[in-house]
Image 1 (cartoon, rainbow, N blue to C red):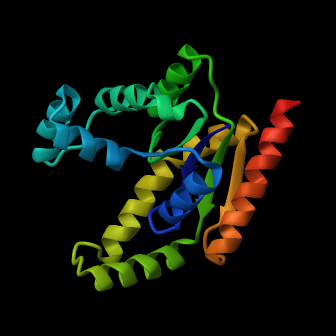
Image 2 (cartoon, rainbow, N blue to C red):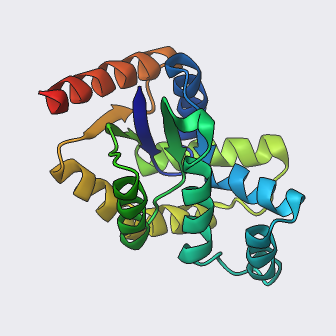
Length: 195
């Protein structure tokens, strides 16, 4: 059983690792993007609330995202663990997640941070935007997203580091090597916190 959170800046390879680790650990990958799409397509009450903000081009407020996460973590397939991707992004979301887990007597086993330096991320995302024809991913937009990540999510990662459950891996290494390093780090943290 593994309850895992994965974090990393856009373009670090976090999404690739989330898919691989979910498969290798036999736990569902829970991404906020997938949750939003599911609630919107099913036209759930939470989806309808989120749609108002998305249609206006605004961020979905924490209380709606947190309600979706709470609901998702109560589903049967999370009984043996889960991999959260994209939540929490902020300290307030982190506190919300702590509350959700505490109310069900659970804790996170590990937090995996996939790292890459800014220039490598910019290079990767510019290549991806050209390949996918995404003109909105310019260098200045990418660097702005990286700045937001540093301001909002780095404090979350630092706090998990102080809890002793953080594993950092170099996302610029070979994909298989990143996965192997991540699995080894997760097992090390789980063994350390189990004693």
